Image (cartoon, rainbow, N blue to C red; front, side, top):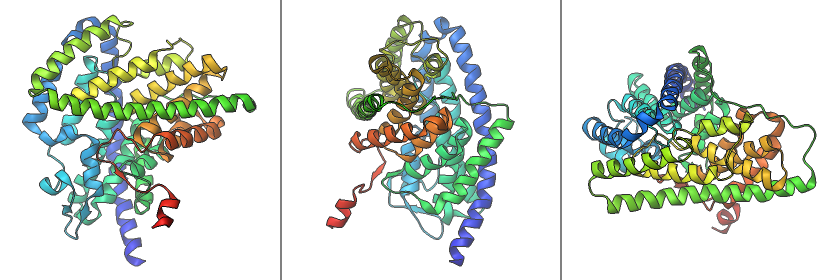
Length: 421
């Protein structure tokens, strides 16, 4: 008990530092992304044609300065799920065993490459980069404060701070950090330090002048029985969309790795082809993170009923060939546009259906349950919390244990399966 209290106190104190650092990083990164996105939107006809050339630069920087960095959040999972001995050496899993610590310059390189991708129009996200930076900062902190035996807890605190700061959803950031490495289990030891780091990061990112996108969805009264029926059916569809995204992304990565022997030629040729198609379809509408689609839906600017399908296709292609910024924001855009399409068929309120779709598709694709519920509530407001929770549970149930994170551990999710043993 005394040892547990000591661990919690030490990690919580370090978590305050991690949260402050990641809050500043998240806030500045968020503002830089907004600036870069505005430049791309204004000059997309001049910038998008160079997407293939930007891809060459990205691959070169990874290979030259930090080869392991392209692993993305899978690398963070290797660290989190590895066993750490009393000296802080990570054992048992993948690259964590081989290199012992996060690559040097990891955070800086990930941020720079993500800005480069968005500037030239890749259909990719941003949370992957910042979550990886949070994991790296947590790992760095464990070494700086000579607390390597607590490196797992501090890594989780770093990821929690990263998401909490960038999206200003501290509870969503907390539960994502607890869930993303292994489905079916939560790392309860990390709850207090991760919660502290997430709220600290959220506060500091706001002090940096950054304001994450959020849309307050209000609902007068309850949905009718027929509307709830449509919502349940829609939630199952959202779960299948998330599952489809995860499966297609995994297969696309595998196919690309088998067919393309030279990554430079592969990303250049693919990037040039994607650039042409992106420019032809609604003036670059499907470039970037997808925040333009989300904003259009909730601000009443309109949407296309096929937005979710095209954004899904472009994001899978871009991420699989090497534009690895993240998938969370594109998934939210895919879910919101799928929800908007559902509202046209079912008569559900547009903003309610879009908000529910955003949370459910994201949860299904990442194979997480609590994170999307809290992120959905923090982004869209508490008035539709029961419908967000219901949809996320159904989507999680039908996703088939598929995940965009290839290294995610699949722990038994069924009580019946446990009792059977």
